[in-house]
Length: 204
Image 1 (tube, rainbow, N blue to C red):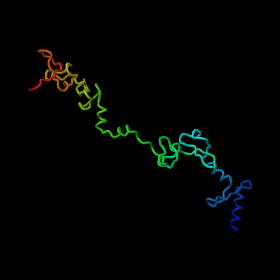
Image 2 (cartoon, rainbow, N blue to C red):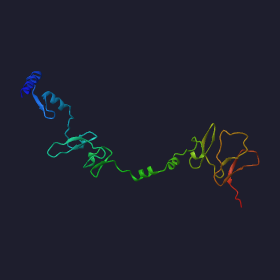
Image 3 (cartoon, rainbow, N blue to C red):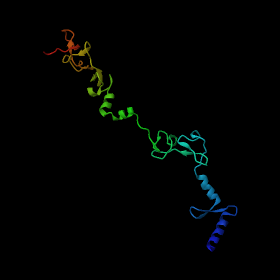
Image 4 (tube, helix red, strand yellow):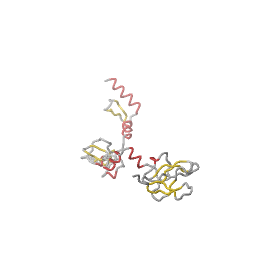
């Protein structure tokens, strides 16, 4: 008891008579009132509210029985909730838990598409660079175009085509073969590297 009295007198001489001393119940340590007040000021300030519009974007107005309503941080995924406004943006309160919204049927089908389907959608258009014909979209083939290869349109009936074997050297701009069911026929007997796509002769 004598030791406690001596300690109190020493503390009183340090802090002065104008500062009250308080026993901190959490740690059984005697602290000055100024120190306790400083700790309280460091705590997060509570903002009173009437509805959610009074709070920040990631907060909601928590209504407490017999107490003032205050702005409270929104609930993260899998946290307990009672309404959607308690959950953080982009989530809903489902079965009393904050849950991300379910994907729509179209989004689910899009995620289920095979890599092959995605590649088909991304195939090159006319004049796009390519390495092989399957890099090009429907109705196109990959052929030489100046110093590189590009997707070119496949000629149909009556359209100009390139007669194979009649060119004297490599051509700067190539052409696709005729569409399925057509062959490249010369326009005349003259030696010309171009022809026209005509129906292939049926072998009987």
